[in-house]
Length: 174
Image 1 (tube, rainbow, N blue to C red):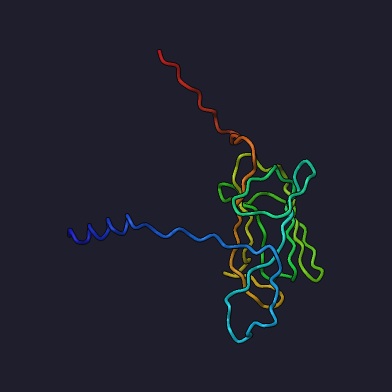
Image 2 (cartoon, rainbow, N blue to C red):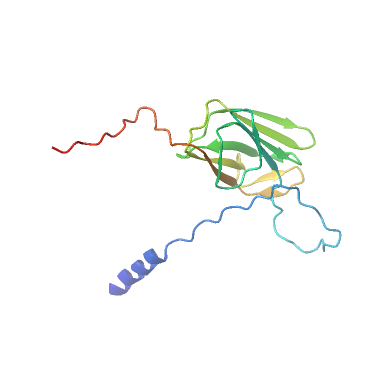
């Protein structure tokens, strides 16, 4: 009995490894003519660019994971090749889908624009999520498969309270 209890304590203290955030290559991978085509170098990173449009009509090129940005009006993603079985969403701090009006243009590549129906709340965290619609992975027109991509970001400013949540008042001491 002591052995089982000691084993459980050790397992609890060891914990689970933290998930590794995916590394996003914002450029298109270049092929080196000196590379041996017979060696599998692993999965090709998903190459794309991101442009953020702020509510004050400014633009921000690129999005790094964990970045704090000004309030956004839209996000535009551009891929060098079309993608199959893929969906694009922005998730809020509760992991709920943020309402948006999306546009997609396929012209040799893929341009996908997410236009927010309401402003994103300041001080809150969001995530840009690119994942498969039906399976575990999505693929590009060349057949390369990709895992889910999640890029967290935060809207700068003071945290806005939730509508309908009462503000806690300090109790006065008597």
